[in-house]
Image 1 (tube, helix red, strand yellow):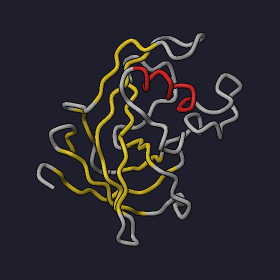
Image 2 (cartoon, rainbow, N blue to C red):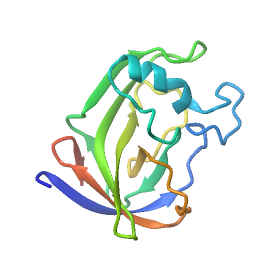
Image 3 (tube, rainbow, N blue to C red):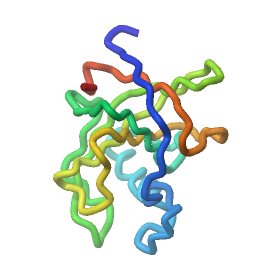
Image 4 (cartoon, rainbow, N blue to C red):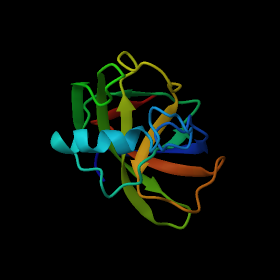
Length: 151
């Protein structure tokens, strides 16, 4: 895969807001479930993916979004929340079983995000449900270097 690099990471616990595990009354089914129809109207269909994110620390490395596959600006997805900017980049999760599955790096722009900030080494990935994944598991993520920079 030209322009792709692999980086090792570790699954870490997130806030639980994207999936609804946080039991935040504002987002009972999670933010991703609420956002899906808005993204779909703008041309990004996330219906095949699990409505939550896998948080992967790539420390000591950090990342910067360069040229995302999708960017949506000023998206007002929740009545009581301010509009946000979102970007998505292609990725592949390489599982220890030798299988890989496609996904997207989900990047709510921190400058427009009201709360639940991620550290600069944490990739939030939307993909299919992976039942065997546990916090602390190591895995490899492949990213497109035209879309995202790892340093």
